[in-house]
Amino acid sequence: MGFLTGGPFYDMIGRTGNNVGRRVKGRNVLSMRPSKSNKAPTLLQQIQREKWTAVVSWLRRLRGIVNVGFAAYDAQMSAMNAAIAYNLKNAVTLVAPYKVDYPEVLFSRGNLDLPNAPQIETSIAARIDYSWTANTGGTNALGTDKATFLVYNESKDKFVFLRAGALRSALGYNLLVPGDFSGDHVQVYISFESADGKLVSDSLYLGDHIVV
Image 1 (cartoon, helix red, strand yellow):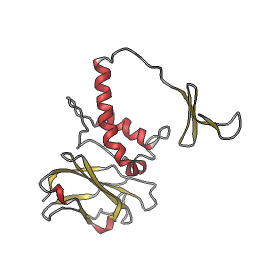
Image 2: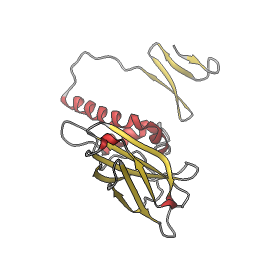
Image 3: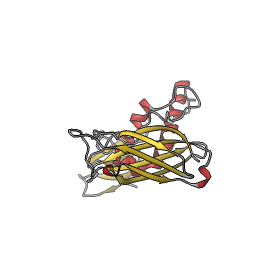
Image 4: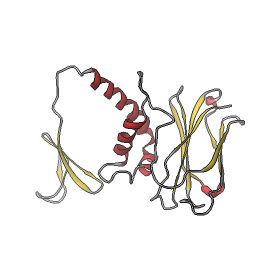
């Protein structure tokens, strides 16, 4: 059931018949429900569905950081939809079984500087040690920027992430991961946001590492 939130000539939220109303970034959007088809999907359609599923299943569990990282990427789309669109185009493997291309995927897209000379160490059990050096003057970075850390374990299909876990000026952070990650390969990422959360950097892939 759809609801008129401000009278008969205002916006509608929800579904009435084939009409679907929603609000996206302050704009009222009214669309039609897609018609059902009894035709089998073409090979191209099936490939696109598999790619879409791979991207959505990876990003949806990161909604909290995606909503910050892609908030300003496209004024016409929600942050999650913008992230899906970007990664569907740029970060899916080329052959089946389709999955996210880990070095290319982004959960944040912006103009803040990436960390300078980032390094990863995994010499201590169940810990990922991040480090970086200070950005020099004249860069688009402040010591008050906050770092977000993300680790993905493909074999267990689990994420560990911490938004705004350390200041850029700290030059490092030790992220704890579950003990049962020991011996597993993990994909490691970092991104930054400004102190007020309004500006972000791209997320940066820091490689495939083995947890001790």
